[in-house]
Length: 206
Image (cartoon, rainbow, N blue to C red; front, side, top):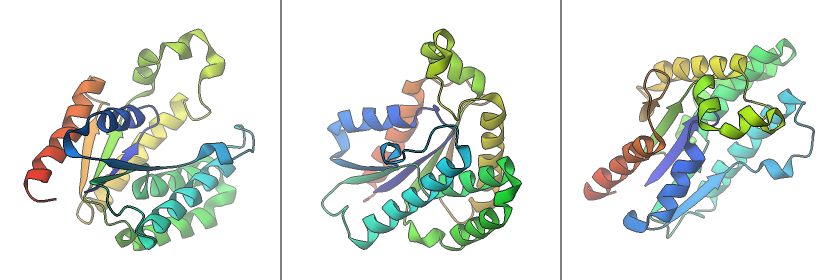
């Protein structure tokens, strides 16, 4: 089974993946994620970080499938993936009009190559800026600990972009929204949605 967890920063993707990996009920997991540690340009360079994330994620997806590096694993999880690449491309265009041409090109190219990621399901996690702050107490006590991406303008825009993409691609890709924008979902409830899907589909022969 091949899963993708995409969506708003700090919506619970990393925590859900850790909980899945700690729970061996459905077998072994291989997690493929973006490697921010290799990127040494300062956090303030917002646009270049987005471009790095897009190409780094794509290269990992393509390499995983080209080299069949997932063989022997029960479940492959992409921590961010195709949907995020499209969303962050659009965020790049929104943030800096100088990137309009390249962002339009990447957006069209990615949508034309959705078949590259043979994902069984994409979990799209959405949450609000206020909920991120309420769940991460360190942000309220130390503003320097807030990641570069966490601010009301960007979080609101990203949520808008994700919903826009969902409407466009829901008929071509299997996407399940875990919507914490309009609901107060705990981490355990989000984990339950993901693990219940895995359990149901393992029984059906994945």
